[in-house]
Length: 272
Image (tube, rainbow, N blue to C red; front, side):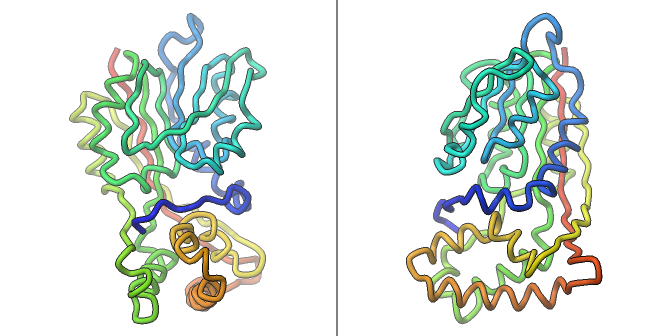
């Protein structure tokens, strides 16, 4: 969608357990940060959302000065509950920023981003400026969804551009913006970084009524819900049609609904 989606932190956090797992898997691969023990690390979280995963960075680096950046006032308002001194002597704060235009104004030991860059057109073109701001030995780490050919996203795109909704939504629809894993590897290596790039497919076992629809209401559906926000009847009609498609694509099993979700990860370290 061409419009900026309105975010709902409460809806997004309904599946926070599943959404947090990739963040742990990403951060656990980050090597020791420069200056460890000599000075507090400086960390930027790009696309911090409601701040729940940003706060986890203080568990790994207790004395770090951490700033979470996001362009959603709704998300930042929710994140403020985590702001302030951390238990390990560090500090956590948040700032409004559009990542399409954000350029570091200081040096960072770690720049991290979790499930955000797919919303930023041309984000890889910002990698040179972002990684130039890394301290020697610093790391740039990110993960993005890589499941845009999955039924959840393919069916959404087909519905938006189909006969019923094409006139209202289709001309405002756009695909997410990610590269193939090899392209990220090439970009990062070309910047003189040492990249580690991999993919993981999670098999989330979701429970409840129409759980895949509920999941997408926090992410992929946000642009549609934003555009239809002033028309409750149209919103309900769209959600009903999408729900029926998802029920066929992701049938409920005896233990819940299996929702395969592929993600792409990159951890790239700057030389000393």
